[in-house]
Image (cartoon, rainbow, N blue to C red):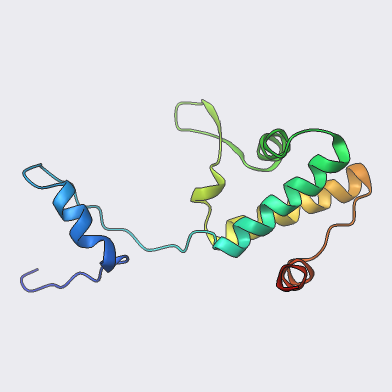
Length: 125
């Protein structure tokens, strides 16, 4: 389409990216924008992993991997299993993942974990 404008998602990074790609061939992919998990979601999710880790004696990374095995594993088009990257989850997917992890922690260990609102209030103190 002649004269079509493109809105940049991160306009402040455009000049930096353009400089890095100077004199290179580039590929432009257009797709619907999906909001990735927010920084607050990320902090809360890692808080949840930390609570479980403290209770079980595992590291937060070990807990994260186990939770991804339970609630964020899939199979690609070749039949090869993989774990989703939490950093690539959109806000809705991250919320569902966090809810699944909290329900599992409650059933498996009897843990009562602060809600996102309670966690946010505790961070403001």
